Amino acid sequence: MTTRIVIIGGGPAGHSAATYGARLGAEIVLIERDVLGGAAHLWDCIPSKAMIATGGALSFLSRSEGMGLDKVTPHIDLDGVRERLSGIEAKLTSSTNRVLASQNVRIIDGTGSILGPHLVRATTPDGGEEDFEADYIVLCTGSRPRLPDWADVDGERILSTRDAYPPKELPEHIVVVGSGVTGVEFVHMFRSFGSEVTLLVSRQQVLPAKDAEVAAALEDDFLRRGVNLMKGARSVGIDRTERGVIVHAEDGRHAEGSHALLAIGSVPNSEMLGLENVGIETDGGYVPVDHHCRSSVPHIYAAGDLSGRLPLSSVASMQGRKIAEHAMGMHDLPHRHLDYDKAASAIFTEPEIADVGLAEADAFAEGRKIRVTKVPFSVSAKALINDDPRGFVKIVSDPATGVILGGSIVGRHAAELISILALAVNAGLTVNDIVESLFVHPTLSEVLAEAAE
Image (tube, rainbow, N blue to C red; front, side, top):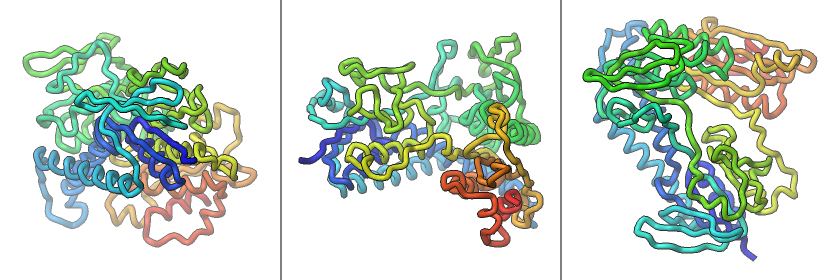
């Protein structure tokens, strides 16, 4: 008998669950109301990284004298950037459609809601309805930017993150509220585009969840580039003025600019799913899951941002794969659960930041004995060739066994280089395994071997 899986949400988690489920022989119905590939993925992640790449090109060209070239002064073309983003989204969406169509996944353009334990209704934009029986239901409806009640977001002067891909006009001076991953990426991007930038930091360091040395390196680079940091400034209000905006902090300080951007997290899209119809437990709108990504109702899964786990596309994709395997009975075979503590993540600032596994501060907080080694990129021939010796590699290992427990990288291509440490952490490799590897010379990866020694 064919297993029927109905998936609500076609982002990285839903697409992955559909793809793997179809490969394993399931009959798949995928319901998506916005865009296949995921709104958060294609409207947040991909455009932000594409704009950051454009900013990186601007920064590189402005530093061309360091490469022995005549100085170049490029200018940003917002219409060109907008066309570029649309082209990337179209190609990715088309690719996703082709893959799903080739696997006979039925795609419904509309919204999905749960009517009963094994019954899902799809409602199309024209009001049409169709009900589907399901052996398993997968919920992966993603999230949207969190908008506080003290900010009247208008999409013109006071922006959410989705109003800035790209903005209608290049801000003269943008005030960024929020110093987490999204906030610092926008700081880097707008500064690269030539905007003056003020960053309101509610605590005493940017990236409060990251290694203190990593955060300090990014702060130093921001200050070198002329970013104004207001630390300990928790935002409580925004006023529009004739010339722009004023952002007010709880302690009485304020920041003026032409625009304000809110980058203060996200909220899950769970309101219209009909969770109450089957008694699915929630926590602040999120759907808590176990190690199989099951909700409190065992045959109903949740993945991606909705699950309240790490809000990373890579994690969502792996959750989707694990759900398909579990629903199709593969958990009865040797099966590796998803270990969220070993997920690699990256921040696409300049320099880039990436980390994986156990952090130094967390190890000390747990009273755990560790060995920490750190090597700067300034010792790397390739870094000097690139005229960019900023940053370092830090490796955390077990002093008794040499097993690599985690690491951080700050520097050019950190998001690519962290894959080596991610493999080491997930496979239980030792520092000696890295040292004995023969890396290409000259490359930035050689610094990993030096840090492992």
